[in-house]
Length: 133
Length: 133
DNA sequence: CGTACAACCTCTAGCGACTGGAGGTTCAAG
DNA sequence: CTTGAACCTCCAGTCGCTAGAGGTTGTACG
Image (cartoon, rainbow over all chains, first blue to last red; front, side, top):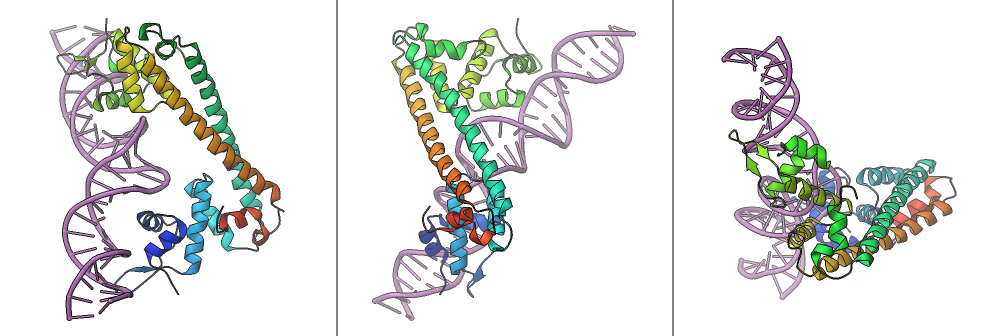
């Protein structure tokens, strides 16, 4: 009733070396081993890996994921902390979107102003060469 | 009429080790040296460093920057290539914004649906644990 | 002209979050 | 019992720097 690392990998979409890496950094507890020292994962371990993958997909940092994982193991605690981590991450995402949007604006401006002639007249090159962007 | 690496650093806002790193990866040509093997940069070198910094600020990849730099040195070429690189980068930025926006939506949903009770009932934890996000 | 010391030099290692390979062992199906 | 896919560990590489050790050079001041 348990899974080899390759099965765990297929079930979660996390690559085999990455699962081992997660174990190495202490994100995932070391699983039981066979006599030949091969890892054998239980359903809960696979669930934890799925949790990690979803959190990674949502862009949470490893430290946050470790904390969320720990919190999820204690179902009777208040989820205030969970909320806090998520909100913090949300504002970080907002910040990144804002930054990329500003950057996008600048790129669009450069491309729009480009007269498509010689490099010597190119607004893109000109902007990049300018004293201050 | 030339600059030590520290002066080049101050003029461009690029840290000293980073300038050396750029030289190491071939992004910036190796400058002249004093008899004691210290680097001496000319105005053009400093201009190139400024160019690099602006391109980095706009999120261009190193490979793109190398190409843009090369293109900027030949002012009579068509700026078609410049345009192409910029547009490619722009669509990458768009892609990243779209991804972050989708992610943001999901985070907001999770936080909104959270009843702020026990972890066991927390929608955030539930979503992260789900088979497919 | 001598000296102090800031700034320079090279080399190496480290970051985060993996990814890939070499070289060797184990599991499980046939 | 054999075969070979999957596993094991360890090490190196990715990207774009950053930091440190330990040693040398440039320059300003007396």
